[in-house]
Length: 132
Image (cartoon, rainbow, N blue to C red; front, top):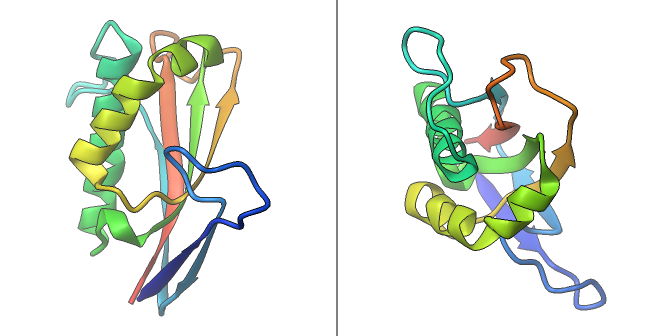
């Protein structure tokens, strides 16, 4: 698989995402929304960064099980119950992303939602990847 991150000079500089990702490969993996659920189906983590780290780890676990790596991610959507809190924690969330997924950012969006499936969940991540 090859990916090209495209960040046109006419757009604001991206921080923690790419404006576009051109991916070519033979397999597309669609990743279901992941939250900070433990093995018993209970939401863990009291803070947004704790839940974000767990949800991202789950997303990457599902991707790895399908044969992919973080650099194969083409698109990730983050659903947050409080975008202001997400923005306030952005530096820490960026550090967590780099720790778990590296510096190859997919095309991303953050969407505020009223609530998620599990009421205790503060954040959910889904996405898709293109594999060789």
